[in-house]
Length: 631
Image 1 (cartoon, rainbow, N blue to C red):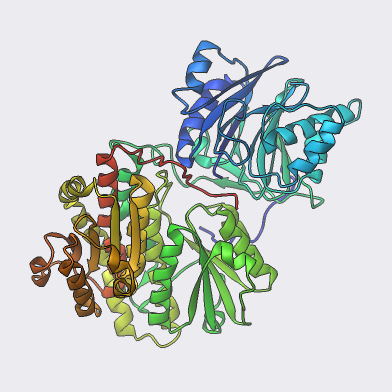
Image 2: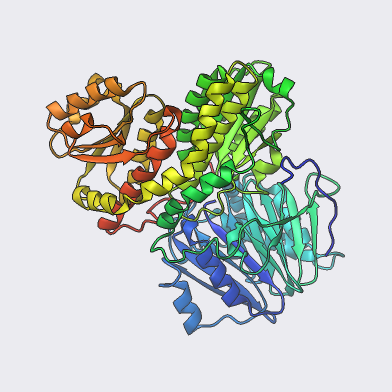
């Protein structure tokens, strides 16, 4: 094994498609097939493998589910060999089909490639290759890249050095776009070439064997030692060693990391779905997010990875939070928390909008990005834009070693473990927990009293047991899901810090049950949406006994007056709610700033049980992928 350089400056001492590759002494196909199954949660429409057997390139690929397509093909037509690459595809260029599935071959059929990302200038390259006599079988940008690599491979015949690596290097110098890719050649049956720009790729290190993958879940059963490639890295991988070079530098920065989770952590266990398993893990994952971070003596929270001194944190005048999807909803809660406790102005931006509009950033403004995977393309682009403009960028993420973890100036890990279900659950509540701790920390550096801080910290400490108590309502929520699973429209309403949870509850229902659902501030209903209320449209009201209780109850009365079915999330001991709502889910009493965490969990279970009752594929909802690594 050769490492060209060591990375420095890690901030914590502590794509939709999927790629896996193997080179070693074991049959490749079973390892590749197992890895693809572990990547199914990312979302895909087809799957395929390419295995080098002596000097033959064996390609097997099929549209549809792995077990219904690719696995059957491999059983009927095995692909023996000790070197191979495999892929699950989520279509970007070219419709889902057998021919558009990966791997793709060059014109000679000797070189195979699997690719995540988008080649933006593929049409110009394709026209050049067509003029040179190339013919194309598919409508994908990946085949264009395969044929370009093959073209350079032919041109490099007779030259010294690794011909395949040089061909990939030459081709990528011509490419505009994003890629995480793995390439093999039938003339070189002991080498994989991997490369990345904007789409994650890691090397797994074994004994006389190596792996390449887009996601550590694909290889965690085989190794805990990995190298996360950086943008413009090109790796040449054999059974005995790997060499990493960089297109834009004389040397590459390489660091071997240990995976923080096990094969068992990434398994479904006794649960019928990953989503349900991950919902029920939240008492533990919230505890993990809190562990070692509460300082009762100082009435504050403490972190090891912010990389900012107390004086630097006090100098912050404004925070911009950039996120996408579920993380954006967490950011909205974070805005309430930080402004309330730290008296710091906070602006929440969609990560993709932050990059394309000229958002004013004053001198003492910092960017905070939120991402479960640490690879979300929009969020990573926002981080890079802020740093380009000279601003410090911090991150709250879950995946150690991810690109955002490595490129941010500092941050906080959630420690939620692998989240496999496409619909985020435990990562969401872990993010909220960390944001609450951060708000307390920033507040104590300003004007937050020790007494109020301790009240919140003690309430945080009580959360894991309160979450366990919420799980006792699972059967009631299952019954509630069956009651409402035929509804075609839902409203979710909240006020103050629970308004973003209304948005999140609606998103969860949309994601996994395909029911149309909208989240609103309860006060906004009377400004238009109330026109849609009728006896067939249920409304989920978040109405904990907080400072907005009376106003939310008044909003609830408007829905009730129009005969809209009401499902209420209320605080234990609330007698008044029983008079106006037939279906009530009770939340344990807590500090009102923490109700967003507790309220999230019954909404997750409610969406889950509705989706199951409707016969939906909960872990792999249609058209969705876990990690969006293309814009």
